[in-house]
Length: 360
Image (cartoon, rainbow, N blue to C red):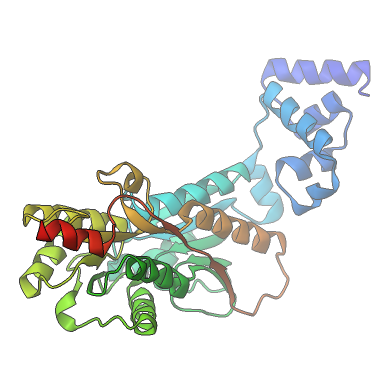
């Protein structure tokens, strides 16, 4: 238990607005080292009982403790900042991954230095200088072709380029394609159209190759007239809308569309409806990602779910793990594969039911 003099000191410093680790130590009767381990999220904190950790967090909230990040950075030789390189800040893929990164790193006392590059080569080229000027401790790349930053710990999300020293969080695209096409095949769809992503997207080629393999395994042909590619890397409905209009100009001999992502799938729904077709009565539509608006769109979107928020959390935790092992050799490329999930909603239905409805 803290002595009367120590408690008086903690009350005095609280009143003066200066609350340090020593203040918390006097208030709780615990060592400064133990409190620091808990509040910094150090792996060593695992040895401290959960009840004691909760006491520490409760006291920090009660006394309005704020860590001195500048002092911490000087002691550690770190800036307590992490650089994040991301294509855009749309409501789709990027925002969901970024939310997981920000929540995890913020809780550990880090701030983000973020660059949105929109796939512009000049921005990608100067990202190393920007991160060096900000003295970031690590870098996370989201949906971005791998850039190397010397010895700076680097973690990637959905990067197609494995590299030594880099941890990459990736979706099991083969399983995702299998889930989507087996669902459509099981509903009786044999003529399926595909909307490919824009060439600059990091997932476009790996996803397309996975779709080709899954389609071949199911005996589903993918002739050129039933495949279109988006003409812009925009997280809006427009590229999917235009791709579907082009698809309809090439062929109307399909009963289902598998779109590159949810925003393009919703664009596809709009284009089909504008062409006088009903979804899913005339054409079923499948998306990819399961972003928030996929559930509230009408009709609600059948899609393959990427656990985007979880992937952001995993990337942030990989960074924290690397920083906690500073000085240790880390030479192998580490790939963390995440499992997809099929989310069946209202934009897909039986091809047989569609045929009956069309005949009627």
